[in-house]
Image (cartoon, rainbow, N blue to C red; front, side, top):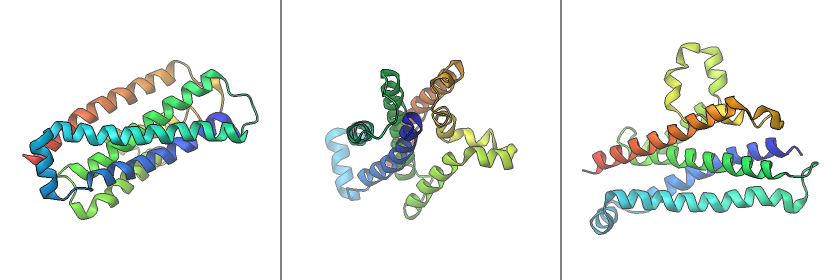
Length: 196
């Protein structure tokens, strides 16, 4: 089994699972319980707490995803420190994307409650098929920038060649991190607006 492409696949699975985890965490409380928590801890702390729990669960799943194949001796090559660094990076980044998608579908007023799961699945499908969509409908290229740049990052892991990780990789990585910061900030504002 190839090292980087294997970790690319497990990071996509983590992306989907983390989306589900975030959505599940946001749907635990009834409206009355949620309002009581708002009074006790505040709206922003409530939101940050949900994100922290989602991230901690994703971190545990990340460690499992990285070390399980090593314990089974699944890889043909020896895993180098750079493989560890890149695999941790992509798993944590995709966990963050999953939290963003799950949060957007659950806590914003854009999507009616009965369509939250459908919207999350739609967003995941769009982010994973971005290249195919742009290839067929190039006029959507700029519109699709509002979705997490999953494919832009994952493409570097598919050839399983460390030579692909040059300047272009760091540009896309920087964009992904800046995207995440902006998206989390926007979600906080949308959540506060919805709950006011």
